[in-house]
Length: 413
Image 1 (tube, rainbow, N blue to C red):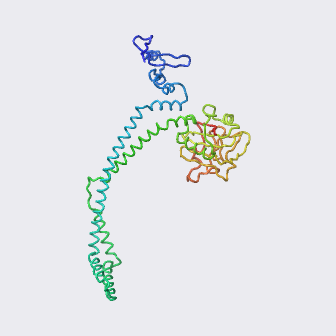
Image 2 (image 1 turned 60 degrees about the vertical axis):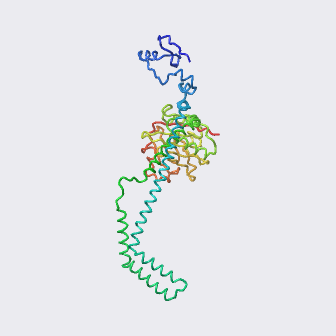
Image 3 (image 1 turned 120 degrees about the horizontal axis):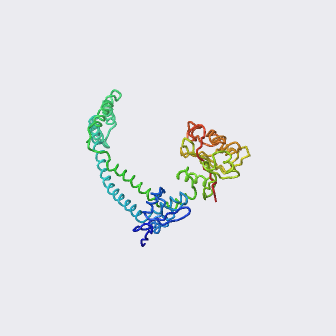
């Protein structure tokens, strides 16, 4: 691409596109300095570098005011180029080669350890032979075998007496002396000094370290491999409270329990935007089903719940979930609490004076989203986690004190 001169600054060339609400400008580096001199804040991250934009539509689109998840995806996609992938592959090849070399060293190391084990065992065996006067026992066995087919009954009786006397001498005093001798010998061998410079399985430990490094590289590769999947996740959930791991977990539960595919999460309520109060809450959720609610308390705890049931402001009663797909979750504790079969009539509670309420006050918010309580385990199963303080487990305190709330209608097909 030929360089285009900037007519505002002689000797400078157009480098960027500056996009504003009411106009778009071609600017050079000196243009940016002029703007800063005039106390105009220039965010270089938002400028579109012309040369890079012409090379990559991903880079170009990532500079526009698109949704944050899609923008992050396009930035990752732009960085996923041949050079980056070649570097990852080269790193893989190097680490695999290192592991192959270490495996040979580990093999030799294990052979050496086997020799040490057998040597130690022979040393123990020699001591045991001395303690038991094992030569006497072997000689007795040889003499007995030599009698062969010509053995007589009295020979057997005589040999039994000899063997009994040998064992009686060996085990006298209820084996107390034998036990002490064995303990002394084993303890002495155990305390024999080892080579202080000899490490225990050094190459094997190095192999473990190399495998961890290989796993780290593989994780980087998987991130590139899953880029197309990342864009699907970005479209499904565009919020800020749920982690990627929690998204996947909840999607898996929903699809398994409802036997349907999750298309996306459509946000219908955001507390800090729409108002953290009962009136705003009911104006957004009234008549809706399949709602996923995510909350953040002042303690930083993130939790929530899902129910396919319809939220109706003036019912003033429990709502039954025959699908048994309602659940509460804690992202903070990485736990899921499914609706109990015996309490399916208490999936949610709708009341005009309340905020979101799941179960028989498993989660209960007052209309101000600050007051309320949690009686976790009443309608939703939590015994498997052996929770000590159920009234503070979800909130991080006894009352909700919510600082943010996201509510989504789950679209299924």
